[in-house]
Length: 155
Image (spheres, rainbow, N blue to C red):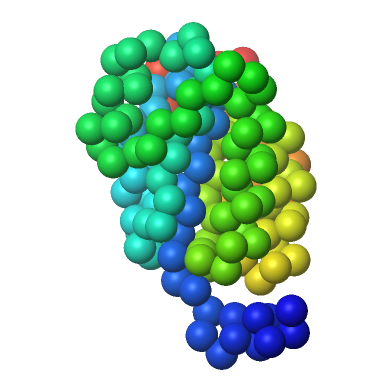
């Protein structure tokens, strides 16, 4: 374990994992662009993983659009939050990434960001809009971005 940590300090991984909480991001009140999300991830470094997590109610159009833009779409019949959190934590501990980008408005991912920071992973929380921003999630990350969504309602 010490050798692994030492190697990480000597040559830190530069890969980026981009994980998107579909049910909390692709909602009627937000106008989120898949290309913009991929661009945010790419701006952090080479994408090692680019995943959109959705439930069984996701439209075929969303799934096709995401796949066409290079996302791996993970469809789950269970709780999307649990699957995303488990997968993100696995990516953090895999020593393949240097940055974790979480796109969500859900505070449930705060422990994932905290774990990543403990492991020396740079973290970025992306909120779909001001209305959807979780202050707890954004405060847990090293950096935070709130997307400017034109269809956002005042609330």
